[in-house]
Image (cartoon, rainbow, N blue to C red; front, side, top):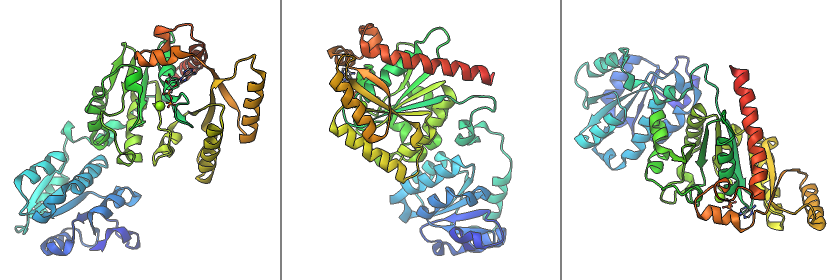
Length: 413
Ligand SMILES: Nc1ncnc2c1ncn2[C@@H]1O[C@H](COP(=O)(O)OP(=O)(O)O)[C@@H](O)[C@H]1O
Ligand SMILES: [Mg+2]
């Protein structure tokens, strides 16, 4: 036996691991593992299992043997997380259970454990269980969610455009919603569009498009490891036949409930199924901001012509530079930009850009109270104020995104 976390020192690749509170409580398991696998197995605790499974060495694992007794019953959520993670990696899970209640056992088996052996281990029981694990299965239910997630070889992945407000109320969500709607309506060959509300706590896309906040979103975000295409598509809502939307959850979610892996899986799923994915981000930098930034083709940040926006922009740019993140993806959007005739306003905008060493790639005009009116009525601007000046600017960007999407799909064909 070796501690799996230090396995790199060993010559034999680790083919299996036990996972338990303390493997010394299961000495018969230690003996049997040694008999079956010699030196090529390790032991892990639940927290270390989660870390280990995310490392490259874990790719050589054939199975993990999770050993539990009745003391573990109070704390099954960690066990469940380990099982789900192993499933996504196509690693089989064997349960070794000592006096574990049937409800708990049933729950863990349903979650994706392949087999179970009681403890103390009957003679030859581990050997037989391993033999069963090794038998090839062609049961489709056993295809790992990870492999279901992978797009087909010839499938192109959709583009991602994210929007983050640099100061609250600077128009990020209005921009995201109307951009998504305009792209989805850019003519007969319009790309398919999916709008994701990742502003987990104060997400207002549901309000701006008058969609229900359903419990399904929480279900999805807390179970991304087992998400397949149907689960994802069924969680989306449709706005006016043309736009698919993942709203924020009904309840405020703690921002750290969602991990970078969750976000990565949802984005991958969205990109595999839509031509264009628009993401509305929270105003704060979170653990998974980097994940979205890395996936995004462009990352729009909205700001206004005030000190608050300028200082937040400076902080964001510094933070991204310090982490070596792709700053070049940032597209700076000045909302409620000064009018053509407002010379002093234009001079201030120019000074702001110079002092931040950035360029405003988009200048969005004030769209008057029509904008809030449309949002409050749950409609995109095009549906209620088709001549709005803000809409005209967003439409230009939408047209260029739709056009580049058409070029890309032609190039891929
Ligand atoms: N260009 C604009 N012209 C007029 N009102 C706007 C404009 N952009 C945003 N608003 C209004 O400002 C408020 C905040 O916008 P919102 O898009 O929710 O901001 P954020 O997502 O950055 O917090 C909303 O009431 C919206 O209707
Ligand atoms: Mg918002």
